[in-house]
Image 1 (cartoon, rainbow, N blue to C red):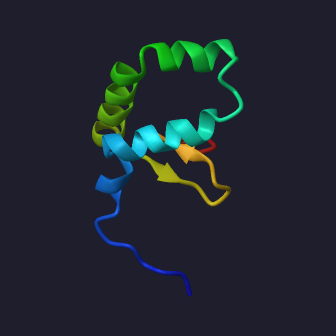
Image 2: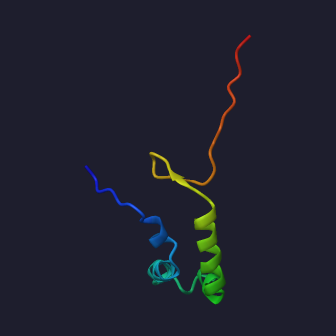
Length: 79
């Protein structure tokens, strides 16, 4: 059985942890235009990402896909 972590989410959207995640993710990719654009506006981008993580709930599906909005389908009765 896996470990259960409580009150772990605030550590995820901490600005320092977001910065550490960016530095690890961008290692070796700093020449890419998208990484360079993100790094040019690093502080506002990290703050924007933090606000998104705080305000927009998400779930992880069984396949590991990130779901940001609930998905509803309408089932019609066959007549």
